[in-house]
Length: 172
Image 1: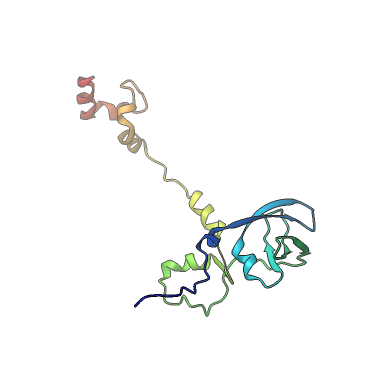
Image 2: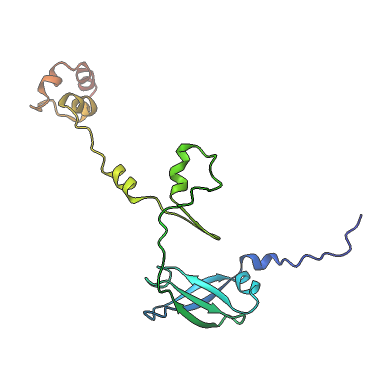
């Protein structure tokens, strides 16, 4: 069987094409050029509404309206923003995962086609601030015996009875 007509309208080159658009924050007037997928603009009928998150241009969140000719037609300030630090939907599709995976999904922020992973800072800080076990003098000696001088007074009792030191010194 021969294929006589190919009706695919997908242009593979357009899938990875980006255009640069300059955005200006309506609150503080900061400017920044951001790359936008060309396919997003092409899919819209008239205007494309883009939500610019905090930190992309400045510390404000705002919306920009971009037309088919890649011109920014206007901006809108965001008066109030909900902070979503934890996925609160308990009736999620991820019920069958192990308990060990709970932390992973607890720290995912999923909103529409937006996905972000934000681990809780308290866990990171707890791991970094764990108390270290204090080593005894004997444990220190066992760990670093080859670096301790033969005439070291603090480790003298361990140095006298250490067979490894005699063998080590005879090679040097």
